[in-house]
Amino acid sequence: MAGSTRQLSDLVAQARQYGVRDEAVLEAMGRVPRQRFVPRRFAAAAFDDGPLPIGEGQTISQPAMVAMMAEAAQLSPDDRVLEVGAGSGYGALVLRALAGRVVTIERRSALAEKARTALASQGLEEVEVVVGDGTLGWPEEAPYDAIVVTAAGPAPPSPLLEQLAPGGRLVIPIGPRYGNQHLMRYTRRPAAGPHEVDDPTPSGDFREERLTPVRFVPLIGAHGYAPGR
Ligand code: SAH
Image (cartoon, rainbow, N blue to C red; front, side, top):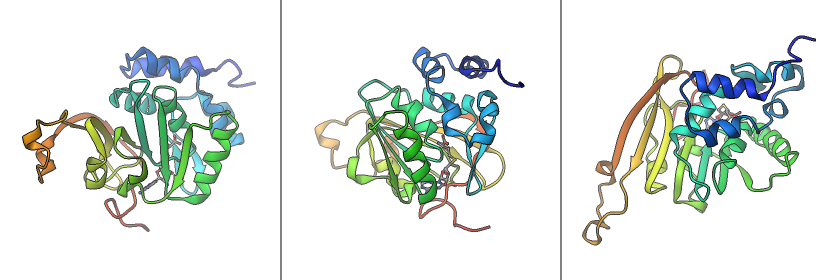
């Protein structure tokens, strides 16, 4: 049977080929069962390093990209993380393997429901899946040590920057709706001195880094692209 020799360790090797060096991330890629998050007819392709359809015109991201984004988020075991774009739930579980608390938000309720079911079958209650426009963030649990966005927007949504803790990282693909985009990281400066606490202009508060060229589905929402098309 084609694919019978493929396994999760292939995803680890592919992530390494893309330059991922964080051992905790590589270990998570070898542990989180991607095959449980793809439609059954694609199970054999779960160990290939490509995106796959998950319904509603959306895709589960390429695994090497999931690994690169997790590495870029620079996670520690106690971190509180927001993922925007739950999709299949796979990426959220990779993040959960590296952090303390993960909330993932999805605008399509049918996908959120499937992600919840897939995550529950892994016995992990600690990933919370919520439905809504993730370009507004999820203020209920802010601030976050990291926010990882798995769809591409025109610019970093201001609510997401605002919901970062001091030192927090926003990892997000930025670029045209369909076309060449770049994975960006916005790092909030560590806590300011007492005289700066009420600084009303947080825009100067962030370090911006362009990491790598990428292609993602569009981020749809109030601080993203318009729906339709
Ligand atoms: N992390 C996912 C990747 C899903 S693809 C996985 O591992 O499978 C990106 C997802 O972002 C899609 O499901 C899409 O519906 C969702 N999305 C797009 N705009 C969004 C928004 N404003 N808020 C929340 N989810 C959004």
